[in-house]
Amino acid sequence: MSDRPKTYSPELGRLLCEAVASSQDGLRKTCDSRAELPAFSTVQGWLRDHADLAVQYARAKRTQLEAMAEDIVDIGRDDTIDPADKRIRIDSMKWLLSKLIPRTYGDKLDVTSDGAALATPPHLIDARVQSIIMQARERKRGEVIDLDPEAIRLLE
Image (cartoon, rainbow, N blue to C red):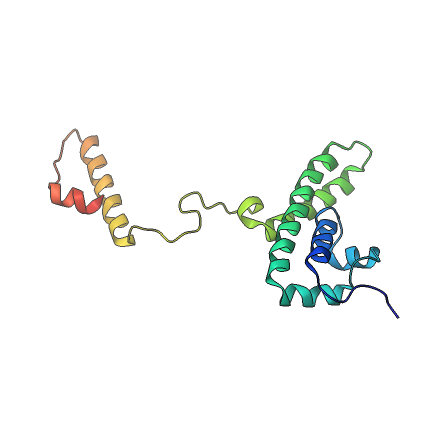
């Protein structure tokens, strides 16, 4: 019979999250390696049933992943590691970070809207871009054009 905890408490949740945040291992291995923690399957149920724990756990995982990002630098500086092994370790960690925290470590960066919906309707953006192109062409030809003030207001 296992004497691992089975009943959730906020204190046990805090202990679990501290263990996760300070570990380089996944949840299953972290649970298996520490007798004071519940079994992996128990934790899965707790995460599903206790919203406060789920929030704490997400923060702990983020802390763990940020530590992993720092480990990449340490591995890169370690001259005792074979270069091929070093490359595999770093590439694996970078890939994992890019998938788990894509906004920070992903390859595609959204520098315009921070992931939020655009406030300006696309047709007005298109009209403003066309206006800028038209003005640039006119300037290139040495001509100055004046747009109708109402048109400028609609395009801004």
